[in-house]
Image (cartoon, rainbow, N blue to C red):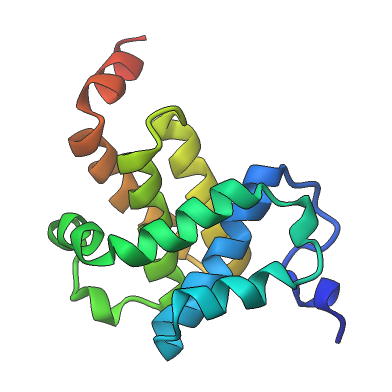
Length: 156
């Protein structure tokens, strides 16, 4: 199987930012399963087919930021989920870390875009209804982290 065939949607048109999120998801998945060093994961991912079409800066921010801040991000997510965070599938866990990181640290990205991108990742790589779960959790988290933005969008 080629690297391209390993991708969930090899023919789907994706933006450089979306590709960065996909690669960050792969790296976080690897980190969650094997607890490998972030630098080693980063180096491995950057060699993958198609990485040259990703936003490398955003990938770097997501992968290293989510790993660095995992404890804080999990603290924010824990009250919003219905089970211990360790019981989540690694894909849902990684997608939620990416979404939480973007909501918290990338205020230039509208919260609806963050949630939509996370839902798309969960649809492409996760279980059957994982995207619904991710949507609900990040919707609650966005109301906490970006209350003014959420309120403003709901009034419009």
